[in-house]
Amino acid sequence: MERADRLEEIFGPVAETTRCEQARRRTLEEVVMLGVEIAREGREGRKIGTMFVIGDVDAVLERSRPLILDPLHGHPDEVLDIRRPEFRETVKELAQLDGAFLVANRGTFVTAGRFIDVDLKPEHFLPGLGTRHAAAASISAATGAIPVVVSQSSVVRVFADGEVRAEIIPELFLLSREQFYARDASVQQVPEAGLTLAVAREA
Image (cartoon, rainbow, N blue to C red; front, side, top):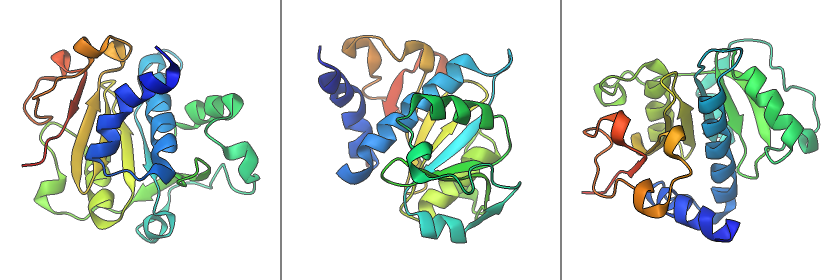
C-alpha cells in the first residue's frame, strides 16, 4: 500500500471527526505520529506525557502563559518544522519538560513549555484522566485548536470542541485496517487495553 493511501486510511477518520481543514491536516498527521513515537520510546527508560496544541495560535497564546523560558525562542521557522528529523529528536527531549507545545497549522513550532489555562467546568475533567487532558478539553472548547495529548500510560488522544475525538494505542498503531479500528467504540466506555483507534461518533 502506498504511504499516501495508508495515511488516508489511518487519518481520514481522525481529520473528519476533528473537522480538521486541509491546511492543518498534514501537521495533525505528523504530530500524532510524533506523539506515538514519544509514547512508545519514552525517555531515559521512563514513560513521559506531553501535549501539542495545533492551530489558532493567537487565541491559544491569550489563554496560556509560559512555565519556563521558552527553549524555542529566537530560532528561525525553518529549523522548527516538525518534518525535520533532527528537530523531532529535539522535541522528544523537550517533551520531558512541563508545559505544552504550540504548533502552527503549517507545522512550525511556535513555543514550548506553555501552561494552558483550564476553564473549571466539570465536563472538561474526564473520568480517569488528569489535568493535561482537562487542559486539552478546555482549550479545544474555547478555541479552534486541536490538542494532541500523550499520556504517561502511553495513549495518544486527539481533542476537538472540548471532547476526545480519537484514542490511539501506539503498540497497535501499525496493524492492518481490520484490526486498527474499534469501529463502534465510545472513547469513554471502551477499556484502553483493547482499543486501537476509536473515533468519537456524533449523536
